[in-house]
Length: 78
Image 1: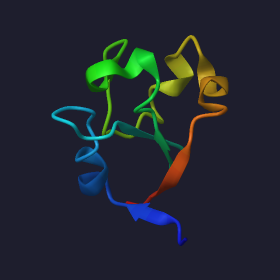
Image 2: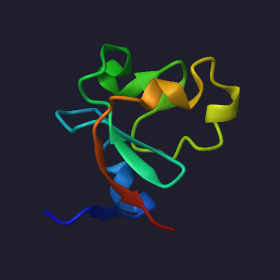
Image 3: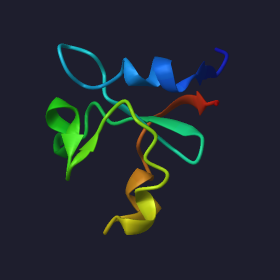
Image 4: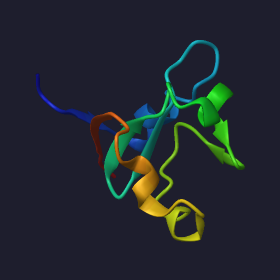
């Protein structure tokens, strides 16, 4: 199956609310955090699903290692 390409507008639809999956992007990679309990209802430590969190990661206590094992669903393009 071909890799899905997301625009920021398309990514915003995956906000984890109203039955939508929860996706986040970091450094151009889109991850499905729907099954991560901490992302319940599309929120985690003030961050919202459906967004590019690249600028947030340097301030995160988890850093990028938290993304290991999270399913990759595509790439984010500008």
